[in-house]
Length: 160
Image (tube, rainbow, N blue to C red; front, side, top):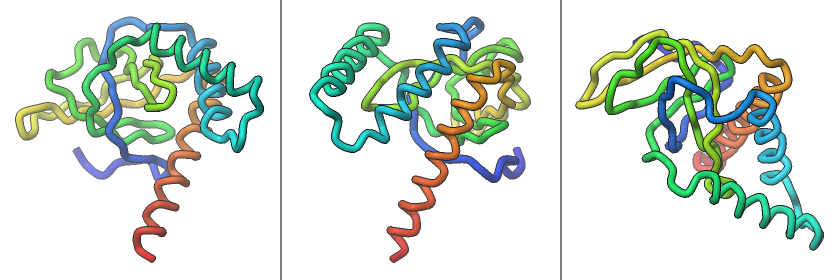
């Protein structure tokens, strides 16, 4: 596999798995990204918001009592690259990813598998997102931009 095609991306170790069917609707996935954004960017929540945050956390843990093993992943606006123990089947499906340790929830994103190459006892997989729901696409892009900026900020801080 060549160079990663997206300029705006971030690398992380995230719980993920390939699946043939989504875990939720595009509407639910988009709302999760909006809630996650508010959850991560909150300064000092008032007591009412703190209670709601705690309820959301408990609900997320109930819905996902155990998450898949974290894998190395690079997430871009248009593409994703990850490591898998087995090559994903079929060529179109959903990548379920938990983007937060704080609010752990597997969100299913539609994907078209482009390539999977055997490497170092596993499979290096690359696909392109197939986000046709505009609200989901916008919420997802905001997440990627935010994580991309955070990663650049951390790198600059380490270099200083």
